Image: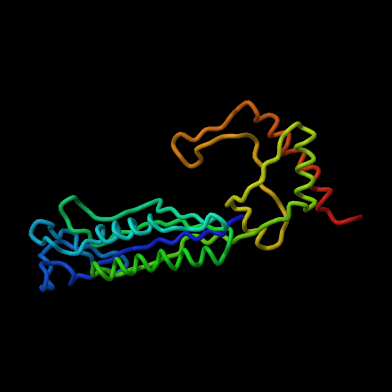
Length: 230
């Protein structure tokens, strides 16, 4: 099971960053207080062009992140899955943020990727006169189980009895936590499908009855494998 890191990375512009180059001015406008931070709501893009924009900074950072080369072995992945920022189409964005998903089956490869991503964001913010704020919202530990572990062998045997073929691969689920703690286990599926986490995701309904039978037989058989003797 790969380790996963999910930081929210925000680009913030200080009040003095608005206005024409060489001037630290903000046009009079309404403000709101969020967590004791005052943010201008209406810095017009027409009268203050060119001025630093948090959205522009974030966009440049995302473009550079998309060009990162990561190893295939150990498998390492990243995805900028969510972005937010700005208030209106003709207002310079004071803040923008992205949610980044980084995963790897190797802790060192994941740490290296995280350093690269943060370095890109820091550079983009520095060049665009912005500031970076990072908040970690997910940290899923890595874990593994040997292919010859009794739990795995039991599941394979039940698959064979049901006429099913066993496929094994690394995945990232809530099961990472017990595996990282040394608690043996596997994730089992009840059917096949494709396009996970997309609007066109689907599953094959035909194999579901056999899949449910597989889960029940596994649960019963594994109580004997994991229960203490006597």
